[in-house]
Amino acid sequence: MIHAVTEILTPDNKGIAKAASLLHQGSLVAFPTETVYGLGADAKNNIAVAKIFEAKGRPTFNPLIVHVQDTAAARHLVEFSDVAERLASAFWPGPLTLVLELRVNSGISPLVTAGLSTIAIRVPEHFLAQNLLQAFGNPIAAPSANPSGKISPTSASHVFSGLNGRIAAVLDAGNCDVGVESTIIGLNPTPTLLRPGGLPVEAIEECLGKKLAAHIDTSKPNAPGQLASHYATNASIRLNATDRREGEALLGFGLMDCDLNLSTSGDLVEAAANLFQYLHQLDTDQTKRIAVAPVPDHGLGRAINDRLRRAAAPKP
Ligand code: TXA
Ligand code: MG
Image 1: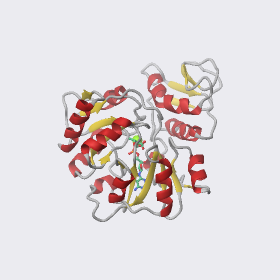
Image 2: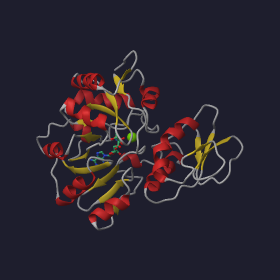
Image 3: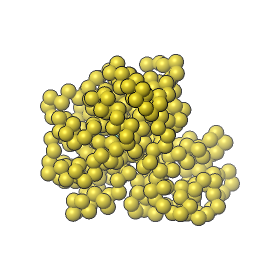
Image 4: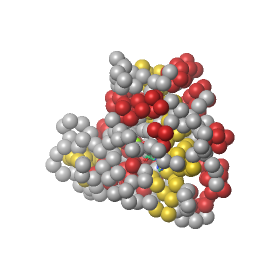
């Protein structure tokens, strides 16, 4: 679907009403969540969902996350186990996605689940995502609003530069607070980490009183965000850099001399919020390589390192 230009909508009642009406018409609207911007479509409208794959140039076997307003709305779509209840009441709304059994008459487009019997579902916290879900009144399917294989957008201008002309509109609410995608947990049969993300694994394990099983098999991705080179920049990436070499841009962490610093105070939450933004900024035509300083591998640092390893992986 070609749009002459993607409309930028203001984060007020007028913008929300316009976004909801575009969704009702089956058009694509990007909107902010607390993690990253999502590329939204009516999750019950096949054509609308198909447009997501078209706009992103995304391989069709990737299932999408569905966004709902609250746990009550989620109950219409999926079966809740006791563990799912516990996680939802502890962390929704927020940066947690649960993969649950889809109900038979949910009405969700099968393109959303890529034919699986399960669906990835979350309740976003961002006020604009909440207001849009309320105004629209139905589940919204939304992957991150970037062209497939590119880094995720944390501002409306990232969305615009990646997808201008390919989607109807973007609701602009500035930068996302969390800055990395939601943490994805599978529950069949045991709680399993499918993708590290904005909710620290430690918090989930504390809530459950046990360790999560790990699903890290890059050859058979259960969550295709796990594909080795999913979060690619155009420049190549050198990890754990302690110096800047010829022709490199250096992305720092903690007090150091560098081009951009994820967090001078060594704060992982701040670093996560800056990650995609700074990779976008450093990934210019002049830069052949981005060197990245070591980031501690705990809390949100795990999600950051996961994204960085993928961005650094050889391109297919
Ligand atoms: O923070 C986020 O999660 C953002 C915002 C917009 O909500 N969304 C996002 O969606 O990152 P996306 O489509 O880029 O990532 C969805 C991930 C994919 O890796 C997909 O494979 C996985 O969720 N997924 C979806 N359905 C699944 C299922 N039934 N089983 C396992 N993984 C699933
Ligand atoms: Mg994505």
